[in-house]
Each structure stands twice: as structure tokens, then as C-alpha cells.
Length: 74
Figure 1: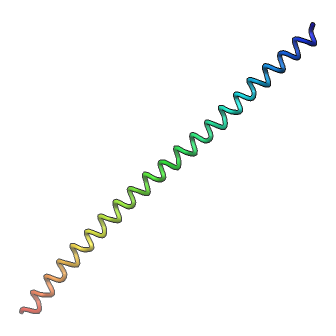
Figure 2 (figure 1 turned 120 degrees about the horizontal axis):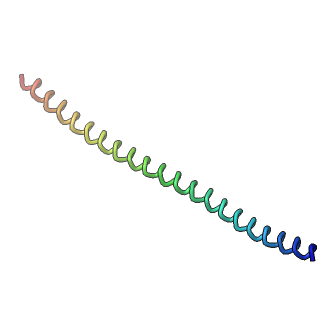
Figure 3 (figure 1 turned 180 degrees about the horizontal axis):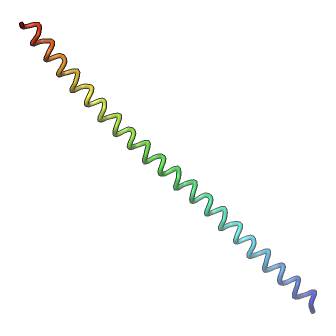
């Protein structure tokens, strides 16, 4: 009788251990996906900053061209 209890106890422990391992793996995968998604958001933020800088550069080029034209007129 005692041998049977030990067998069932270890069987359930194995099943619960298996589920705990699955949960740990899912937790790790979830953390990795979350970190990757945050890095993608930061990347899109960098793209937005890059577009803004490009627009500023274009505006500066236009302003310099206007100043150059005014200087040429003088």
C-alpha cells in the first residue's frame, strides 16, 4: 500500500512538474516577446525623429538658399 502511494505521488509530482516547466517556458517566451515589442516601438520612435530631422534639414537648406539669393541680389 505504501509503495502504491509513493508511485501515485511521484506520478502527480511529475505531471505538476511538467506543467510548471511549461508555465516557466511560456513566461520566458512572454518576457522575450515583450522586450522585442518594446525595442520595435523605440525603433519607430527613432524613425520619427529621423523624419523630423530630415524635414528640419530641408527647411534649413531652403533658408540658406533664400539668404544666398538675397546676398547675390545685393
